Length: 359
Ligand code: HEM
Image (cartoon, rainbow, N blue to C red; front, top):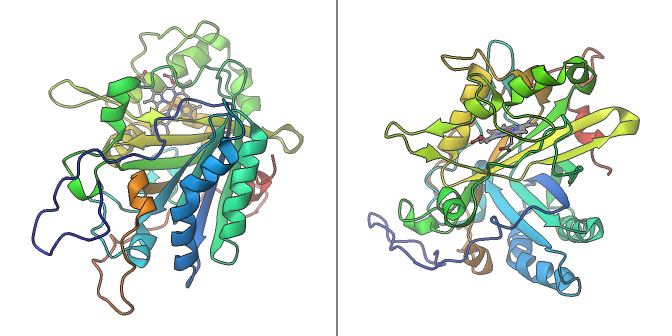
């Protein structure tokens, strides 16, 4: 896809076929670590060095553990792009748009880099995440860290199988990887992450049949139900011509029983963030058939960030940094910050971020 030389001003970038994506299409694993950091002023060179070495680190730690499926996807946020690269911005890289529904809100929270580390072994996720943070020491500030795990037969902590309708094969590639619509970024992708905390006590007071109507699938057998206003229905998105639009979700449960924390880390890859944002609007702002997604009555979004996932060969051979003082195309302005829901205890409400920094 990308070459290290930006296309000449005014000319359309040449499509570069055959670019190698990062492992966004890796199969579901049993463990995942999610790191979100912001880049401190002056930390840009350390970040570029780490991103260039990431595939090598993955090989170094994964080679001796065959079958562990260790992988890491790195993604770059809107505000840091112009500090890292003198190269056209990905066409749809922008800050995550906060949503204010009548009942529920989706906050937009800071993040310059996302690392999505996956493996069948927790120790390997830990080892790679530790090396990433060691290399970035002094260059970044941690915003969030979550250790996710597969729960039972791929269930979320609400007790439902999560991920069933994910696209596979060519359909997944087509849903997730940028193509000719943005040739300078072919092979890349967009990813939106949100950390949700569940009120399991309230959820578990509902009869199973009521939970099933909210999700839109049966709990024990995972069969889809014909429910107009369910989570599944609100997230089934079609274009005017009837084409269904997919995203690829790699959600992971996380939590700490001792601290009473139970959550779902939502992560959705897509060729355009528009599709994921349409789903989010349905969930938070409602549709003709539903005022909102009732999953939200039991699940609070405490983070929300949008990133661009460069292709693997972009990271291997990154374009130059902007010259000091050079004018760069301005990043889209961040949307007005939406306050993060505050708990009754008067704390900042993002205390949950710290609470999940330990497994
Ligand atoms: C609290 C957070 C969430 C939980 C616990 C959750 C759980 C689930 C479950 C159990 C299903 C049914 C099985 C399947 O995966 O197909 C599902 C489907 C789905 N969810 Fe979520 N989800 C959450 C958030 C989200 C968000 C934020 C989005 C989009 C922005 C989303 C998009 C989807 C889509 C596209 C489907 C498949 C719909 C279809 O059948 O075509 N989910 N989710």
